[in-house]
Image (cartoon, rainbow, N blue to C red):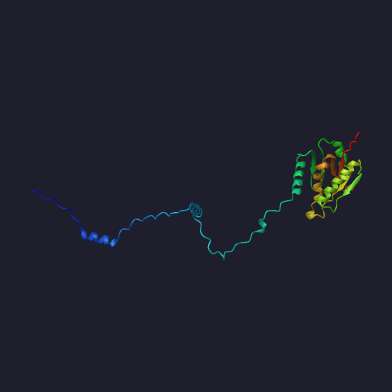
Length: 224
């Protein structure tokens, strides 16, 4: 008669295995995902989506808010007339207007394109007799431009050919900037004045030097 195979030797009885299971405690249950929140209104969905991750401010009564820095404010824009004048002067110097201009801190000179070099030299050296002059000291930019226009148009009508504009050197201006001097080329190259001016140049010392400018005017056409 054959023998039954013997069971493998088990050093721990089943009672010990059960005891260890009790000591380990109950098996943690698998977490159940929360039920999705039911939103009845579409607007609520949009609002909740937009506010996702936003934290409430809470009570910030004691929070310090620094005042705005004044030095970070943008500079005050220049008035329109100043911007126009600067743009026009840039066009003059760059040759984009029908007048050639030479401009520096002390010296200004300009003439219509194609103007005689010999006549320009004579004007620059003060060889044209000055027939009248206009002193612009004490006037604002707006007042000075109107006076220059009236003076030149009047001189043209009565047949003057060379006149003198005394604009000053700006020694009493803010930062000693000769504001009127910088505007002279602009005033002479726009509007009705542009049609009657042939050339202009900083005056000789005996006529005011860098504080004045000669202006050569076209000869008025005689109507038949």
